Length: 334
Image (cartoon, rainbow, N blue to C red; front, side, top):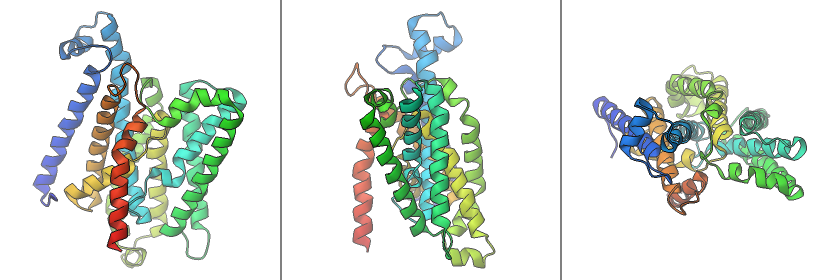
């Protein structure tokens, strides 16, 4: 049921904000090491250096913050991608962001024997930005300029290219495979706050810019001809959306690896709640994306305890049936 009034939409934002905080608290409390809510509170109000307090402060708190930031960024980037390409199945991976980030990490691990997770962050960001730039250039070539179809095809081609190069490097270097396998699966486990801090300014810029572009995105979704008729400089708007997606998805992938389906599933859930107005859709995507990824991360801790399933696997379990449903609905609608 779509929330039609401003009052209901505002109430929904407040409710989901509290839900996000609640899931973050659950992420801090629950896990392999048995802790309680009282222990978690004491870890911040009266830390005593115990093992439980150290785990809460240095492992679980950064993990909750990273999951919230990454989930929000991927969901907002997915909504923008779907608006830009007019494709309900579009996600940040469409720009080759995941493939470009993975290729750069595997390349530097294979050739320069890089093993630092902090350095992985910047390598992934660089690879994601380069892949997106190539897609944008290829998708803009020609008399018609950048079109949704050309952008989609360019993204698929670049993603396939980088994925093939990555697989080739991994086949030739088994040591590199062992080092990057967990990152390539997508995870927020083992990530430290030091990995999020350098990236958070880019994510903040992306969040603020996305909300500033919301009205322009609404106009763009009406079609290029209508948008131009209303005086919008569509090419600049598309470029701006592309840069925002690079900041959000590139930063998210740099920290947590390629986590799929958040960017596909969440925008559809948000539209079911508030419709297609991006002034409301994007904030809802941010909150729902953070909630979904934290929930998936909590579930990942208990599936094969004491081992953990990479959260990217959990989001795939959630997202694959939804992806099939959306794809079949789109086919049947035609």
